[in-house]
Length: 548
Image 1 (cartoon, rainbow, N blue to C red):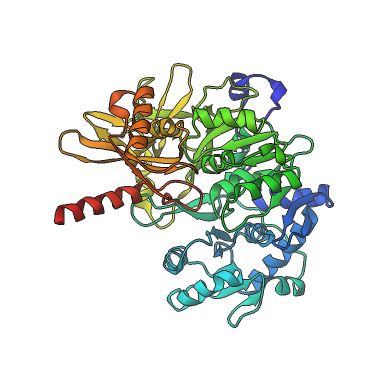
Image 2: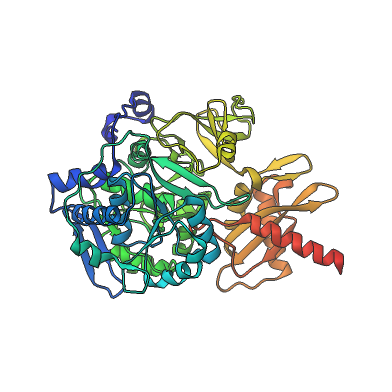
């Protein structure tokens, strides 16, 4: 990628060309080459739970990864075998990924929030032969171990237990010499499971090429990282693709250090303290995180000095963007991506004239389009399937053991995201909602994003989600679920006030005819509101009313 001084978006986009190597290993790119060129440079700054800070250089990471690669090999694992990484943000998480990739093995990043049943499914679907985890999660592994015949090796990073091997103790006994394998660039590197919007979660297989595919969008959205003094952090879990490949690995590829710290749940004041204490300059914050930070009083108490902020996963919204530019003194670059193809649309305020609330434009090297279900391009301004032109190094290789789903992901040369969108006359893309979240009312197809953005503009609303509920006359009507800010109580009067505020901002068919006040929203571990769960709750409520 060129620097910010190279010119405007059109020049950057037009000048970009892909030059993929034949042989490539991510472990060399994120670790080995820095360990050789600048062995004392910090790679990880680890804030431990006791408040102590531990610094790992790139040379440290290389040595530990080499040792772990030797341990895994001695345990009988071979090239292509899968290793589950059941950990949060921790140095051992990063080391395990690098070690496995060095040896041509595949990792399975997995959230610690999953219960035993979800883990059992992922173990058996992936066929993982080993898992790296901690004592807190080992109980779940023990519960299902007899049901997971492929699982042979358990490595514990923080203790000893029967049936497990000490992670750090094993590394101490292993050789620190290991030759990183040179692999075809599309060799499978990891399996990342989708959140399962329909049916069981699908294992998205990505190759080593994915890191190369991330670089243009990563540099573009993070305002041309690396810059002097850059230090990266995100509260997002590294088990999530955005945490692992929108933050950790491309930051390391750029030779920039990463802060690692993650509490069990997101605490906005704690996040501000971390960014202040460690002089974090670049970060990824989901819209939910930004909304919670907005509720913190007296932000000036924290010495936060951010250079670049990226947000995504849900529509950020005009008000939130404007608040961030004033309160955090930084322009948030909103981006779009998904497990199957991450960091593919985005904004970069330095080189792209902003359109507040848009997803931006395709990052250099990416071709986007709005297509119908057959893969035919639709006219400008038309709502349709948001899609990206294949092949591309960002894209999944396949869904693990699921050729049918893989085939359904593509329409001709286009990879279908499953999201709706439209492109305007200037080439900016606008999110229209998940394909399965679309509300059909009185002949209109309505995405929930715009409604939720309007709801959030009301000062009493902290979080909002819109779904369609059955209606005999209109097919569906819009129902909004709302979490209120402190100091506000549910009432019919407040519901009318919020409803009318949306009616004033949007078309008459887009306001919520029903409003439910709730204490919290069902959400994924990455901060996405699970509208499908709200729909199921509503179906159950209607069924109970009918039966009664």
